Length: 570
Image (cartoon, rainbow, N blue to C red):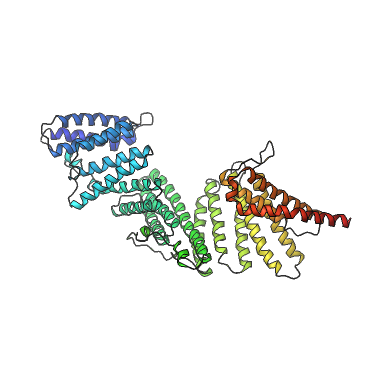
C-alpha cells in the first residue's frame, strides 16, 4: 500500500469493484452499461491519483498496470474494442520488465489473455494464439520461480477477497481454455482436447466450476476422444461427468428450501444436462460397436490395426477421481455377448434421454434420440449370427421410426422426415436381403414366403419414393437440376436402390413385370443424366454409376424379351 492517501485509494477501489461485481449485473436492459461507465470514470480518477504520486516504486507501476487492465476490460465489455486493445497494450508497457514480479504477474497474464480474446473476436486466430502463448509462458516462468503471486486488489485495500488467492491459477485455466479454441481453428483437435482436459482437471482441482456446466463440458470432451479411438479416456470423462452430475442433486434439494425460483432454473438446467450426458454415453456405445465391427472386418495385420489406436497425446491423460467404470467396457468387443452388454447400457441411457426430450416440447431432440436408438440396433445386428434374430432387431428399428414419422408434419419437419424415410427404405431393403438369402436355400418357396419378399420390397420402395418425391418442385413437378451436397448422394442412392428393388419383385404377371423393368430403366437413365450434367457427382457416385451404365445396356433386351412373351401369350 502506498503512503500517499491510502484510505482514499482503498475507498475508491472498493467502489469500483462494487460497481463492476455487484451493480453491473443488475443494470436494466435499457441502460446495460450504466455501472460499468461509472466504474470507468472512477478508474480514470484513480489513474490520475496514481500518476501524480511522486514516488516511482514497483508497487505504483503494478497499481497503474492493473488500472489500465480494468479500463481495457470495461472498454471491450462496452463495445469499444480498439480502445480496450490500446489499454491492454498500455498496461503491458507500464509493467514491462516487471511481469514476473509477484505484484504484476496476475495483471500480466490477464492482459495477454484479454489481447488474445480481442483477436479471437476478429477471427485472427494465429495472433490470438500468440497472445495466449505469451500468457502461458509468463505463468510457467513465474511458477518456476516458486514465488507467491499477489492479487492486485490487495495493493489498494490490503484485503484478499474470497477466492482471489487463486486468481493466477484460475487465469491460467482460462488461458488453456482459450488455447483449446485456437487449436480447433488451427485444425489440431488432438491438442485442443489435451487443453480442454487440462482445463477441466484444473477446475476440479481448484473447485472452480458449476457442477452442471462442468459435467456437460466433460461429457462433450468424451466425444472428441471417441473420434480418436481413445475409449479409455472417453469412458473416464463420461464416468466423472456422471458422478459430478449426480453429486449435485442433494445440493439442489437444499437450494429448494432457500430459493424456489433459483432452484427451478437450476433443476431444469440439471435435467437437460443429464439427458445430454445420457446421449453422450449412448454415442460412446454406438461408436464402440461400430469401430469394433470395422476392426473385425479389417485385415489382420499391424498396419491395419494401428488405425484403431488412440494418439499418444491422449493415451497418457487421466484425472484422479474415484468413479465406477464397470458398467461399460473400454475395449473393442469381439462377440455378441460382449456387444449386447454395450448395447443394453447405451439403450438404457437413450430411453432415459427420450423420456426427458418429450415429443411435444422437444420434437427435434426427441427425433434425434429415436434415430440414435435405431442406429444402436443397427450396430448390434453385425454381432448377431441368426438371420431370424437380425430381422427381429430390424423390426424394432422399423417400429421406432414408423411410430415417430407418423407424428411429424412433413411441411415443418421435412429434414427429419427425409432422414427417416431413407433409413426405413434401407431397413426394409436389408430385411429383404436376409429373407432372400433364406429363400435361395429353399427348393420350393411357399406363397407366404414370396408374399413376404414382395411386401418387404414394396415397403422399401414406398419410403424411397416418398423421399424422392419430396424433392420435386410443387409448381413444375420437376426434380431440381442440382441437389444440395448433403442430399445429393442419398437421393441418387434412393433412385439406384429403387431401380434395383423394382427388378426383384416376384410376379407371374408379365405386364406388371415389364412395367417394373421399365421404371427401373428410367431410374438408371435419370442417374446417368444427372451425373452427365453435374460432373462433380461422378466422383462420389462412381461405382454405382458404372452399374447404372451396365443396366441401361442390359434392361432394354430384358424388356424386349418380356414384350415378346406377352405378345406370344395373347
